[in-house]
Image (cartoon, rainbow, N blue to C red):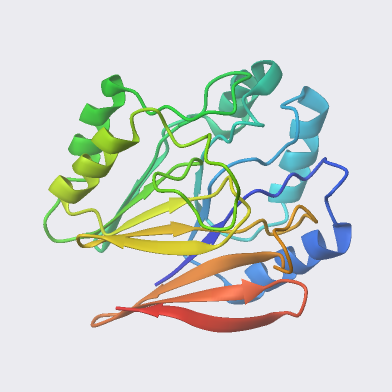
Length: 239
């Protein structure tokens, strides 16, 4: 099973690189993943005309199962309402015989900071309590600070409680974006995987546009980072 994790496309922003956007589409469609996880910031300002571009772009991705969550940019200007019209829910869920994946909206309208909320802890417990499946939680905001990204300001205000919940439930992977900087932390038995920006010039230092591919087999899981600008890949995690 192949799961692609992509984030921070900013499809309508001035930093968006159309060539990289097309390259991402080509790579994705060649990979043919079973599941696509997108951890937010599809737009720059959440305007309706931006979401029209999002719809057009996503129509070109040939993948059946999608988990798409809101980013802080997508929630601006009541963009969260248009997001729900297009993607039907801010809390998408996918489950089959091998995996259970829950998307959570960690954004707040017109605020860059993150917040999950106690009212959503029960949803996480309900959906990600299975003992015999690989469990993935997807949200826009990172729960642990990311090196090389400056002063930390946007971690969800209730990150500590959510981290404890991840450990208690034995969640295998937490996917996030927001910082445009790829990174992996391991806390207890949970891997916290932050993806970079896939299609924009909003890059840290000398980093490059990228996204991740999680490959799950019967006896192992491996994570590859795809360098969009060079169309190359490297394995960054094996379990």
